[in-house]
Image 1: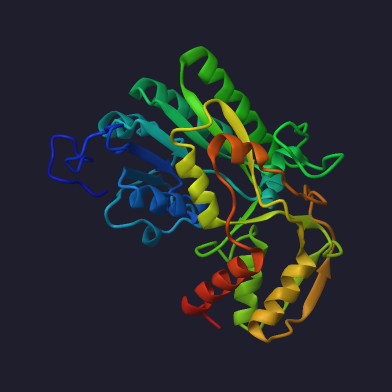
Image 2 (image 1 turned 90 degrees about the vertical axis):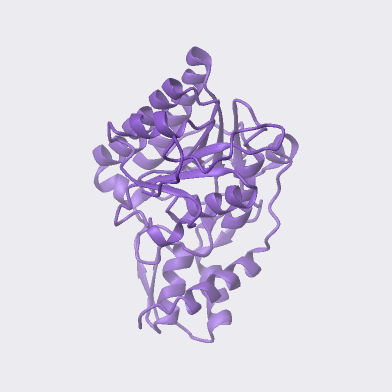
Length: 333
C-alpha cells in the first residue's frame, strides 16, 4: 500500500473540509473498470482517495488502473482487516463498487455471488458505521428490474430480478435503507444501465462491447446469444463517473436509474463495430444465457432533477472511443 509521511499512514496532509470540498473517500473496487473511472473523477475534483480492491482475476481489477496519487490497499471486502483500513483512513464517504458483477457467474455459483455482494457489503457497512462515515454511494444495477412489464424503466418500476446477481443487488438496496433508518448512515444508490468504455475487461463474461472490440481487433469471430435483438441501455463510463461525483452531496436516501433512454441491440453493436473496424467478424449464434433479460431502457429524469446529472456521450462516439482505446492498448492477436 502507498503511505505518505504523516501520523495517519494514508493522509497526504489535506483535511476534509466542506468549504474547499476536499473529502476523504474510500472506493471499493476502485481498480476495476467502472470504479477506476470514478476514482479518476474524484481525484480530478481534488479529493483524497483510497482504493480498496481484491484484484480478483475475473473482476477486471488492475493495479495499473489506480492513479499514483491515490492510496491503494490490496484486500477483499470480506476481510476482517477492512476495519483497520477504515479506522486508519477515516473516510467521510465510501463509494462501494466492489462486486461479483457477472450474471453468468452468479447463475453458476450463487453462493459465491451472495458472499461477495451481500456479506462483503455488510462488512463495508458495519465498518462504515464504526468509522463514522457520513455516506455510502452504492453501485446498484438495472439487473434488479429483470423483465419489466413496460419500458422505459423508471426509479419506481417494480424490481423483479431474473438472476442471482440482480437479486443480490436488490437485497443490497434494502440493507442500505435499513442502515440509514437504524444507524444513520446515509446512502445514494445508482442503478446502472450497461456501462461501457475504456478499461472494461475484454476477457470476462460481462461487457459485450469490450469482448466484441477485442475480437474484432484480433480478426476473430464473435458469439451472439439469443437472436441478437435483445437490447440494453448503454451508458458511457465517464458519464457514470460524473453521476458518482454529483451524488457526493446530492440524492440523500435516493435510488436512481442511470442510463441514456436509448435501447441498443447486440446486433446493432456488431454492425457499429464492423463500421469502426472495417472487418466483418464471423458470427456464431448461441442460445439465450440463463438470467438474461430481454430489453432494458431507462428514464433517468429523477437523476436529472435530484442529482443535476444527465448523460452527454452519444453511443457511437463512446463506442468509437472504446474501440480506439483497445486498439492503442495493443490487444494480443
